[in-house]
Length: 453
Ligand code: PFF
Image 1 (cartoon, rainbow, N blue to C red):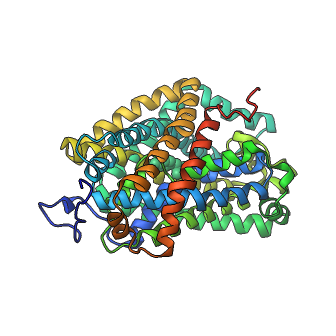
Image 2: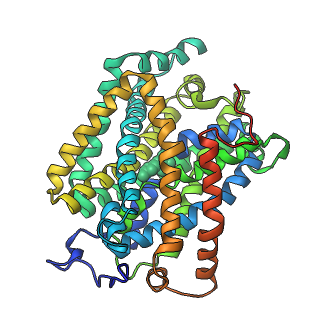
Image 3: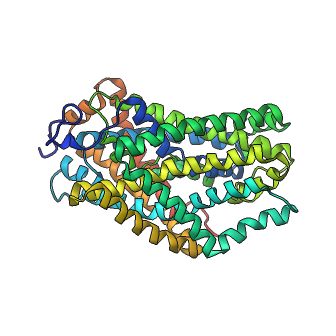
């Protein structure tokens, strides 16, 4: 069988496939993977979709999606990556055969990295811009403060300028490689992020009078507010927030050591990602409620609604908040660039420095179109989240469930017991159906839903 390849043994042996960089240990890998997972999706998107779909009931459904779709897929991606010790394209080839059609899944992943980073970096740039805006302080009427965001988005020079800074930071970190770039920075950015987040949450819960309302909103399910649309958005979000469906976890998995336990690590990453999203929700909603505002503000929650509160809450809250957002975005953007870089390094034989500069620059150029034209930004965002990631995830899960040999899967998972059997059952019958439904919904093709405006 073509996929009957032996696992590599041990970390860096010059001249073997394991010459590629590896994480220094479990802690480094977990921080880097949590860094990839925790991003704009957690701080910007999770609170606003939770707000729109009514709180607690949405959160419960989302948790179900993480367990039934997110976790099995993350385990699958890590297994593929660690087994092959290659980028997504090379990994599908190595686990099947050279020229196998499954390599298209890897290609789709590399393309998704390109598309997502080009708009992600624009939002990352706005986050940096808001660090400076909050240092200066938000002043004026609510309308004036909110319109600052429209002014930033509407100014090509400003948007491109901030995007340039964000991309330069991303490229700078990836240039350092796995240990000295991605892992080292994850070890700085993630603890800083957690520290700020806990500080903001404690402030929100105990220092404002919106704390108890925020807890009730997030944890008391009101099922009447949950629509079918909400359920499917929870599924789509589980994908995006865990960085699944585009080979990021395949790539990060390829730098894992043999002794790491994939199931345990995937559970840790998923729990940390979810807890961080909930902490962000608590921090944000307690502020929002303490000012008597509505939770369902939509996408403008962070850059339009919150600055109005910050004008009163002060710099001590707003400056750390936008640092938090920037750190989250940066630790995710490096994983997006790394997917593309690893492809050029493994498959095309480029050096890391050349691959990072050339591909990073190309992504930067595409990002300029997103910073300039809102329609390009929206199309990239919509297309990648609703089409590329679900298709990539669906193919990855089918590949692991039906194509990869049982013996290979058992070796990578580390056991063949009940948990393994449950995993394979879910991967075969539950995850693909759930993803297919999300995909059809994202493309507005579900027959029983109404998609009229
Ligand atoms: N997980 C990131 C977030 O929640 O913002 C987004 C993301 C990063 C998606 C990396 C995909 C990826 F490969």
